Length: 121
Image 1 (cartoon, helix red, strand yellow):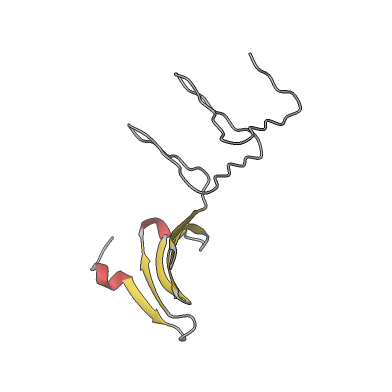
Image 2 (tube, one colour; image 1 turned 180 degrees about the vertical axis):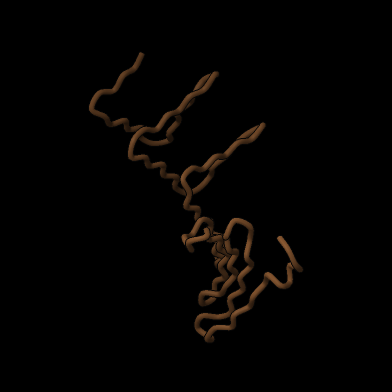
């Protein structure tokens, strides 16, 4: 990047409904956009064609993270934990669970497994 970072920052003042928008131009054509949407604040990263890659919506209930990408990787040397009132994992092709140690499935209620064929050992 050449020049002062302040030169890369452009502030656009919108209407009171739209709020204020700030854009920072990043390398490789990406844009960091910070804006207001009603009572919520948005932080977005868009690619060179304007498509959304990452959105953080700051709501009264807390932040909401949305990512749209070709691939998502999470890697930790110790643990990855997902906790929520509800967790959904959906795939159009395959879901794989693998472990070099044991895998546990525990449900306080019913455990339902549906499939065309269910293979157990």
